Length: 81
Image 1 (cartoon, rainbow, N blue to C red):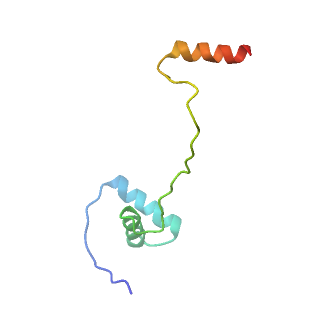
Image 2: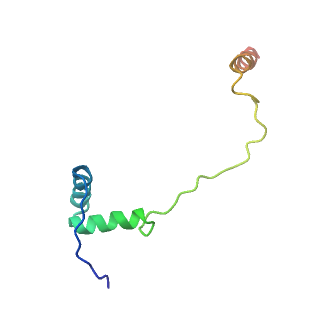
Image 3: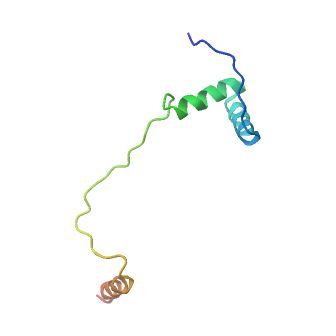
């Protein structure tokens, strides 16, 4: 069973409005919405980190992307083939 502690916080108007929007969207009280937001912020909520899959793409076809002229020459050569 969760025990609730009553407290007073001071937040700016913009944050207050955002928490109220979340509460309305989720159909819960301001306190419940704020608790959910804090849990997610602390990493205790339902959100799980997402890792993008990685793979070895092999050797880069263009070695130096800072060499714009070289990149354009290489693209022109490939288009001419």
